[in-house]
Image (tube, rainbow, N blue to C red; front, top):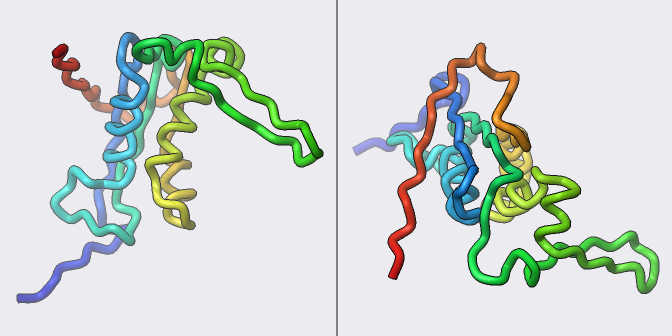
Length: 148
């Protein structure tokens, strides 16, 4: 039996919209990463770019569980000694509402040229509006969390 490889230029690409309002950060990021990689397609190949485009709206309304809003920190360093700064989730969400989702999705993609290219196929917007209506994106629904 012969393995079938599809050329990336022959793959039909679709656009998907994920509404992050009231959703958990990790679930939104995992769904977006799967769509970007193309893992939901039968012709998925790990080393090829055959994934689709993702638009995430309402990024400022994404939720985290427990006390993560105050305890989860994002770190950055300017390169100078002693200049590492930590900023909690709720402050980052107020300052740059797209950053937590972008950071989570980037961590779920491969750390190579392919991952950097796949990341450019995702667009994140703080509000409910996006300028990609001409691409006729399909809506993705994330199943609710089963409470224990």
